[in-house]
Every structure is written in C-alpha cells, then in structure tokens.
Length: 435
Image (cartoon, rainbow, N blue to C red):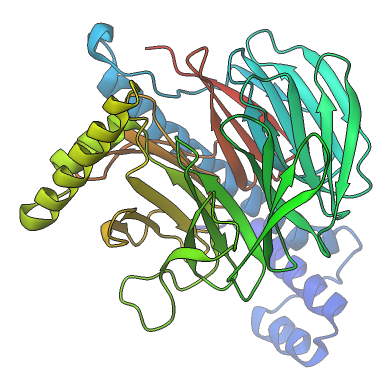
C-alpha cells in the first residue's frame, strides 16, 4: 500500500503526464476523482518517463539474468564430466571478442592450416586475426561496398572476397595486397567458394547467376543458370565434384562442377512440395565422412537406410580404386528465414531430418562438427546451438545471447579447437572448444 504522500506524488505525476500529452479532459476528471489540490510542477513531468525507462531496463536485465542462470545450470550439469569422453564444443565466455570492424560482420573463414581467421564486414573491410592470440595480422581494404564473403584457397596462400560493389578480389595473404580484381556479375556478389585445386572460383549473385572463374586469368568459364531470384549462398561437397546453391526463390539446387552447360543436376524444394522451406535459403553445409556414417546409422531406417548404405558402399569402392578415402558429402543441411533447419540426402534429394522450429528467428549459419556427431547453427535470435545427430537431431547445447544482436555467421577451425562467429553487433568472437 502507498502512503498518503506517495499517493499524492503518484497522482501529480499522472496529472503532469496527461498535461504534457494534451489529455486535458482526462486530467480534469482524474484531478477531481483523486481530490488533488496541489498544482503540478516541472519535476512531476519527469517521474512517469523516468520510471518507465527504469522498468524497461530492469526487464532487460531480468531477461539477461534468466539466460545467464540457464547457462550456469547447463554448466553445473556438465561439471565434473570425464573430459576424456567429452567432444570439443564451444563454451562461454568467448575467448576473444574483436571489435575493430564498424559494420555488420557478414562472413568469417579460417585458414585451412593455421588459426588465422578472416572476417568480412559491411564496412567494406577484411581483417585477418590470429584467433589464438587475438592479434590483428592484416587489414585488407579495396572494396567500395559491403564485403559479403571471404574464402581461403585450399593451401591458404591467397584469400578471395566478393562484394556488393559487384567485384571479386584476390588477395596475397603474405603481402596483404590485392593481386587481381574480377568483374562480370551484373549485381551484388553474394558468396564464393574455391575448387578443390584452387584454380577456379564459384560465385553467386543477385543477378540470379552462378559463375565459375579461372583464378589465374579472371576469365569466366561457366555460367550456371536455374534460379529465378537472388542466389544467396553456395556450398561445395568435400570432394568438390558437386556444389549446392540456395536462393531467394526458396529452392536448393545441386550442380555438377564439371558440367560446362551450367545445368542443374537436381532441385530440392519449391512451392507445393511438402516439408520444403517456405522462405529464402540463408545457409548450406555438406556433411563430412564421419557425419555420413552417423547419419545413416542414427537418422535413417528401413529401406531408406538400406539405400544410403548401398550408395555409401559404392562411393567407398570408387575412392578405394583411386587410393583415396571417401571425404563424405552424402548429406546437405540448409537453414532458412523460416527458422527451420532441414537435412537432405544428396543421392535421393529426400529429407532425412526436419527441425521446423530450430530457432526463434532466421537461421544464418551452419557448420558440421569434425567428429560428425553434431552440427552447429546460429541465428538472428542471438543464439548458437549444437544439435546431436547420434540422438536424432536433439539439441545438445545452446549459447544464449552469443552476440548482443543477430548472429550472422559461423566457422570451425581445422588446426585448433576453436570456433568463430560474427554478428550484427560488429563483433567477431572466438570460442574455445577445448574439452
């Protein structure tokens, strides 16, 4: 209950607020009903707005504390677990939080052999970081608009980038300078990936095309056409024989890398197709060899499992004849603005896992764990999640509020137990995944 003085101050604050808002009739009625005799003063006008802002701040703080409490409970549950049997997974707090960029982080990519991380941003810059020490190794500037994607060559000696300025640039990592600029797309260049030997680049664009470029000469080799809207993302299979594309038309297309005619091998999804994405595709990722085995064993059943086992046996025979190990890539996962994550068989195009409400907002990044037991996702709901394939795609771990704003991209380091993420908050974060 309020004291008489507190009641009087509350009534005066309400009257002052109504007066400022111009609700004079309501003010007169309240003054009469409450029996207020004193006139309002300037100080009374601040009470309602200041207290309301304080309530909003407290609500935000409560939400943050609830998320922290949830994370601590998860940590307590895992405390004392035998680390010899624990897989490397990201844990809070982040090992490093880089704040050099001034715009949204659009992409992060690790060097194939070292813990060097390249980050791209809407501020038109690329920064190469030492993910272990946290030091800046290079700052690469030359694009005239947002840098949308970066990719290291297979041996890591050069870095490629693409931009909203419609260009692709090739950078000498050691010298820190641009050695070639490739043009040909007619709109924003969204994404790029290297071929297996590093001689070619694939890029996609808002001009609805995918193009294959000769890196040495900058000459276009093949134009792949099939999407009818902005092609947002590309992903190559581990052996680089096929690649996948995702677009604003809500379709996923599979292509043979060597097809000079540029015709799609297979189309997944579309209006009227059950379990298809209902909004545009934001991210794609092929499975690795470990994941292939675990998916076939734990996610598939009966005839579908038999079919995939037979396909896997045929792949193993083919690679054995070449004296190589099967690199994987039998499955493809996709994330969409419809908040779902879906996993498909590359062989049949059929869906094998459907997480319809994987996140509370757009799914922006996906990566398979090197053990094959998990895949990780990030989202505009600010979280990073780890999904357990051995347990049927069950949520294993989540980092709430991984970034202050939307989480836009993920990358896993091949040389150390590290993961990187980027966000709309302009921060690049390095997560320690050591067991």
